[in-house]
Image (cartoon, rainbow, N blue to C red; front, side, top):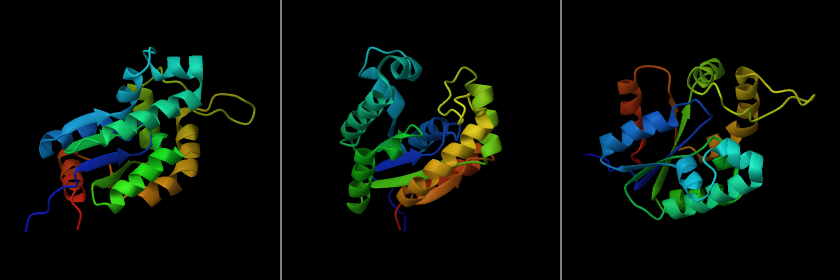
Amino acid sequence: MTRTPASIVVLIGLRGAGKTTLGKALAVALSRDFEDLDELALASTSASTVTELFAREGEAAWRALEAASFEKAILKDDLVLALGGGAPMVESIRTLIEEAREAGRMRVLWIDAQDEVLAARIGEHDPGRPPLLKDDSEGILDPLSECRALRKRRAGTFEALADAVIDSQGAQEDILRQLMRASSPG
């Protein structure tokens, strides 16, 4: 018996986990649309980057845009949606995820990797990234320290929301097979 993937597959995880890259591949494999929540939220503002919006309007404005964009995005069916790392920490987004999961419309997959791998990916693919955290002396954290601190803050929420955890270290074909299996309930 073939299992049918949930109507919406949401990918969560820390920055550098591969949510967008793997989400696009999963969408193709499932013949679904792919959306990146960061891109959806940015499209609703005059800012050209998240960094610009943070500097101009602050994190609260960004989180409000994410929440509104998420609410609109999940009205679609047959969707793979990659969330920004902090989006699951927004209460209204968590509530919508929980309701959609309970209704059987959504599967949530936590894309994860070791902190050292995430830090290396951030440095390699996103060297101009804005720091998300500062240390107690208000100095900027290096990518590895930031990954560790964010994991400490977010792992409990990710774990509570996730139907499955997928390790994004390894061959993309193997990871994609895991994602396809995890996209289907049961």
